[in-house]
Image (cartoon, rainbow, N blue to C red; front, side, top):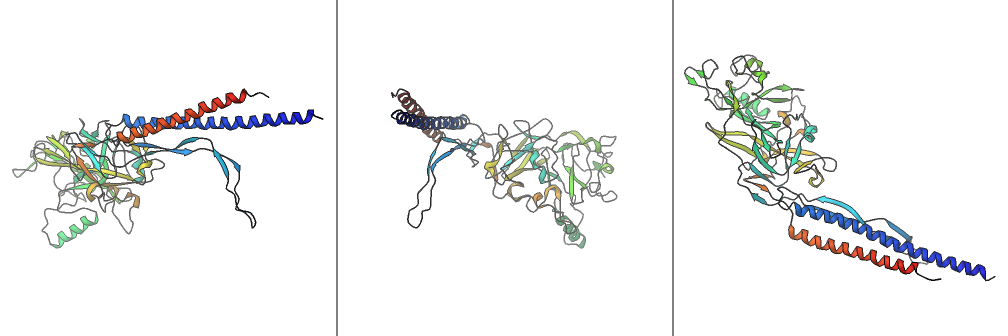
Length: 450
């Protein structure tokens, strides 16, 4: 009669020890989770400190998050006679909730290099391979985004960053609507001006900015003018050797709503004498005094086979890359500025490069200072009541400016990182203490006598 109750009492004691053991091991596992999470936070802090002098680096931060919970008692709202009770729960440690990218603009770090630039405000430069074709907003993802404007000219005349990626933007081209033969205020002038304005251009300027997103490149140099190549007419030079020859805004493409830039350095437009054959150019990009609908403003000079020699080159506050040649100022074009819906959601691709993948939202492209305001990508214009896609509309970029002669400094705040490092170290130390205390209690438990 006494054996069964004793057996039951021993079972209860074993079950109690088992419950205590499981609860204490739960504390140990919670502490282990805390150790891992604090170590990961130290990795984030270490990366921030390591990049304290990295141009354009954006600080990261780790967010701690509670892990799973066990519910010992559910809550209730109470009844007419009894009050409600709150739920009883206990958690099992911490985990990494998020590692955020802090994209706030940093300070200016002067370098003295004329083409070095910093974006003041939101946005990214767009860089990539020189053969990327941007037909619409859906192709923006072909290019990488960066905040580091360490630019230079490569041997082929392209504007590149220090990694060799070509900078994309809006190039200077020959204005196909330029008219110098019309007197202002005449009916012909008013008609021509209306046609130019409808296409987003003017008839007053010989050169214009194309809204086609292309690699920025130094213009080609003109050859020595001769009567044979049309450089001397009635004893007057039409150009001087080495003058910049800008690309031509050429024929329409697709559904007749856009024009393309014709690279005059492309060999398929040359004749046997080494000059440009106007007849080989598409409609809308020929000689002004030619036949058909070729509307190129002025003669096409023979090309010297190299790019204009620029004594100096810099980038101004509106993002224009300006060079100084023997014949005067040369404006290559304007760098494109990309903005995303969620700048902190961009994906790091290594080094100073990002891409707008899942989490970043859509990309919108503009030029600084409202240069491309009211324009559509690839020189598209509304036609026959058909409006180009809204995604192809170019922003005004008025909230951003370019500062040259330096780069954006790292956003790492060493004082903040060291303070976070101390807190992380103490948090790690506290979690190790939980493990040692739990181990000591388990030792006492297994040494208990019946």
